[in-house]
Length: 106
Image (cartoon, rainbow, N blue to C red; front, side, top):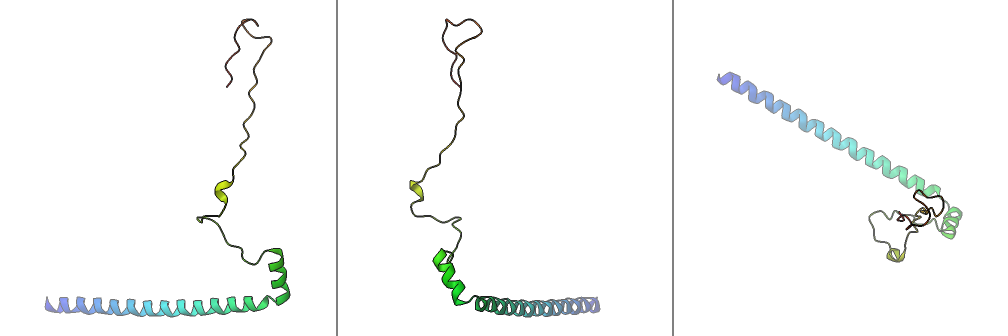
């Protein structure tokens, strides 16, 4: 029984060591990927020359950002025009004759 417990403990320790090793490898991969992404972003930023930057700023493309979930100044003043279809009432050729109250407008 003692040998069985010792072998189980040794197996569990081996598994823990393997998991730690895997975790370290994954961290190294993530760090390497982050470095690659950062270097690619730097290269892309360098590709934009001064002329195109000036053109973007002149046209107003300099700082696009989303407004989702953010308060926009002056937005509470705005309104939307909602189109409601017209409802027509029949004045002639009504069932029951013409000399009675008009039907309710819907």
